[in-house]
Image 1 (cartoon, rainbow, N blue to C red):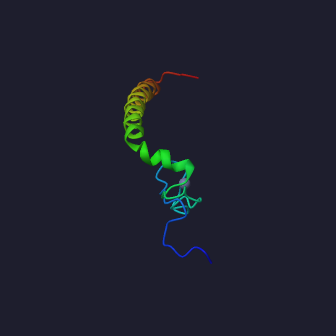
Image 2 (image 1 turned 45 degrees about the vertical axis):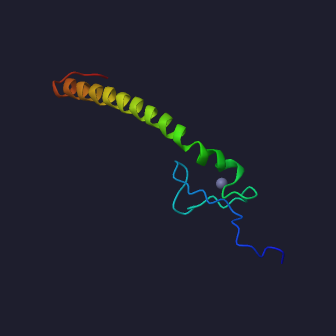
Image 3 (image 1 turned 90 degrees about the vertical axis):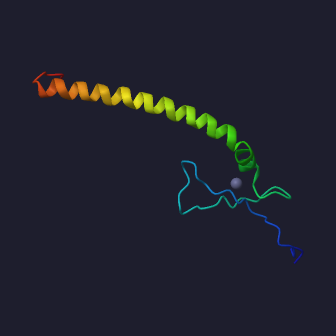
Length: 87
Ligand SMILES: [Zn+2]
């Protein structure tokens, strides 16, 4: 056995993005030397700030679309309630 140190050798990335489930709490891929994350996740961790800002923008856009969609659905429902045949 040459591994006598307590160094982390697997990626400690905790998947909080879509696609990760509680069955897979951490990535557990081999980590880069001296790092706590694998090559796939190290940039995610260190670019979290910008990624979060980008996501916020996407969320704003998504909620705007959602508002439009629900407004449209409401209008359609109203028409249907008034006996308007949309088919
Ligand atoms: Zn990883």
